[in-house]
Structures are given as structure tokens and as C-alpha cells.
Length: 562
Image 1 (cartoon, rainbow, N blue to C red):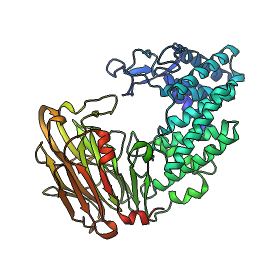
Image 2 (cartoon, helix red, strand yellow):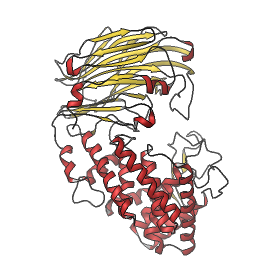
Image 3 (cartoon, rainbow, N blue to C red):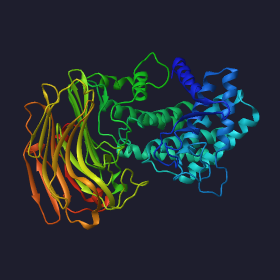
Image 4 (cartoon, rainbow, N blue to C red):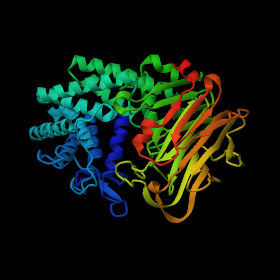
């Protein structure tokens, strides 16, 4: 971050700062963990953003800024749980208005997030702060490190695995605590071994969290006194940058899919700034390795597959496929829930200089429904995919909103959402039975066919709805009066589709469907492009789907790995 950007951030926070409380006042946006609701608490005093504001003030310097930072830290430090006998020991609540006990499941990540900023403050700005406050910061870091060690997250939780390694490694170095430091170093070694074994991050290709992972690894690289840790961080940074570079789609300027986690489908300003600064040799801070620069400008065809899991540990493998050319990007997974932070099938298209995205959704009452389980396989610009229903998952979240296959709803549907810069685009759509074809400009066509619907809920209904900013291509399972759904009480619930995204004259291959007593196999393509999926007909448990649903990858994929 340049000094101009830092000053801009400080000025933005200054407008939110309440001198009476010594915290920033911001709209309540969290939907997880907090028990506060926007109708009763539209504005809240958020602790972590206040800690970040204090850190920025110290970075910029000046007596007034340093004093304000000290005032903020006094309030934030007081809110940490310092009682080692409690389950929430070492962490902070989200907001000043609620205690940890009042939260809806406290967020243990707060030990990592606050801990990192406090470590950086202690390492680089302790001389500017009062001695008594510095001692409080040291104690808070110790408590945060203990919380991180107790929790001991595995290497699959990418950004927290790295952040916790930084806090304990560098925090242990600053505290002179070899036990904490050693834990941090070993944690980074485990993460490096795991990630190298997979070949990429488990939190794969996440536009919001990959930059965080890079920032955390860069912090270790810049701040740790351990030569071994610095070497591991450097190698992990290279893995992260290769992952990002290969997925960037120059024609649309977007981050190609699929995404393990993302809060938005189009890149945010933060993500754009991150990449812009990293690719600008004149800028200060984190830099993308020069050997990956070409990916961010080349429109050459890309087509590759990557495993994203440690199969021996998970019991299954999830492959990510990406295809890109000078007009479009299409990415998909082989398995995953339809959680609102996940993008199992995602495309981007350049339509005369305007960007359009194509996102697959499964919706309950208009919200992404994570009890729908996706299985798919991709060959270049074609994807064969299907849905099962889970009897042990959640509605909008798999842990915080568990419904176990029983719920009330007035709408259940599968959607291809087209969004982006649609305002001046016509996007004509033709409906032929259960086949939908949409033209994106003059030379790009999106087509999707429903090739199987074995469901006790009846036949799918097709619906196409256009607004100024979105186009909905829907397959409606149910729409009407609110009714009860019980996935345990039905015998059949599986839907299969074939999708193509490409040239206007591109034809969608015929799908061969073999329906068995308990499962169905769909096959598309010929010779090296042939691929298939095999999924059960009845609803079942999430992890049974993950471990037992089968895909046959096309052979041309293996030959085109880059």
C-alpha cells in the first residue's frame, strides 16, 4: 500500500471514528457468528476494523495518529477473553456491543486476525507507544497464540493455517517464547508439506482469500528471523502466484473460475488493487513474480486440470478444470455443495468489450442452497453436471444453518445466472422443450439442456426472466404456496444437465443416459473428449456423495495440462 493509499484509508476511517468510544462505527454486514441483527443494530462498533485502523495510524506516524492508535488499542485489548479456563480463551468478539457469550458461535479466527496486527505493531512500532500499553499488547499476543495452538487448525484451512503460523512464529520470536515459536515453524512446515503434496491450495483459487494467503506468506517472508520459515514462505508464494496467474482471464479482466470461496462473482476493487499493485513494478509492497506476467496479458488458449484435495486424507478427490480463450473463460469442479460462497461452475464472456458472467446456482426461496450437491465434469467448452439432495446439510450454511433435509419453502429451482455489464445487451434466449439457448453477442452461444429429471417432485418447469442487470435461465422444481420438504421421505431426486459455452455454431454433443436401479450414468463426447458422471438417484448424506459420486475425466484434459 502506497502512502497515498494509506492516507486515503485513514481518512475514510476518520469519518467513522467515534471519539467517545475510541472505535470505528460501521454498518452491520456480518451474517455469520454475530447475534446482532441489522434491524436492531444497523450500526456497530467493530473491533477488528478498529485494530486495522490503529495499525494504519501507526504506519503513517505523527503524534496525533499515534495517540489515537493507543486509545483504540486500549479498548480493543480490553475485549479479549484472557481467562484460560474458558473455551473462548484468547479470542475477541466481532463487535463492542456484544460479548463472546452473547454471540451466535464466536469466531476463533479472531485470535489470528487480531493477533497478526498486534504482532506487527509490537515488532515495528513498540517504541512509539506507552510502556504499559506495550506490555498489554505482549500479553494479548500470548493469549492469542495459546488460542491458536489450542485450536490447531489443519493445513486445509489455507488462510488461517498460514496466518496462525505467522502469529505464533513471529509472535514467539518477539515474546522470546521458544515453545510458541517452534509451534509456528512446525505449523508452516506442515502446511508446506501438505500444499506441495496437493500441488495447490485446498482453499483453491479464491479471489477473496488467495490475496490474504499471499499477504500472510509475505509477512512471514518479511518479518520472521527463521531462515527455514522464510524459504518455505517463498516457495509457497510461488505456488499461490501460479494459481492466480493461470486463472486470470485477460479478455474480460476477471479472475476465472472455479472458486472454492468467494463473496462476489466479479472482482472487487480490493482484488483489482491487489493485482494492479502486484503487477506494477513501480509500486511498493507485494510483487507478482515476473515469470507469471505473461498470463495476465496473453489471450492464448488455456486448458488444464488440477486436483484440489489430499485424497488419502479426505477419502475423495475434487478436480478443478479451467478452459480459456480470447473470448471466454469456463471453469468447473467435479464435486461440491451449492453454498453461496462457492462457484462450482462459472464462466466469463467478453461481449463486445462488456463482461458477462454465467454462474450456476441451486436456490431455495431465492438463496443459494448448500443441501444441493453438485457433480460435474468438463471438456473444454462443455460441462456435464448433475445435482443430488443431501439429508444432513444446511440451507445457506453447512454448519450454522443445519436443516438435515427438512424445511419449509415456497420455491426451489436450478438457475443459470447471467450478470455483469448487461444493461445494453439484448441476450436473446430460445426455449425448446428443456433446452435453453442464449446468444451473448453475435458469436458466443450459451446452451443448457436438461437431459434427465428423476424426481418425486415432478417435472421441471422452464422459466426465463430478464431484468436490467440479470438474466435468469431457470429450471423450476417447485414454486407456489409454502410447503414442507423432507428429503428423507422421497426415493428419487436427481437432475442432469449438459452445458456448452462457445461459438454460435457450436453444437452440444448428445448425452447417453443409463438409468440403473439405484444410480444413473450420463456420458457425453467421443474418443478423447468422452466424459461421464455416475450419481445416485435417491437423496443421501453429503460425504457419501463426495466419496461415492463418480466422474470419468476426458483424456484430452490430461494431454492439455499446462
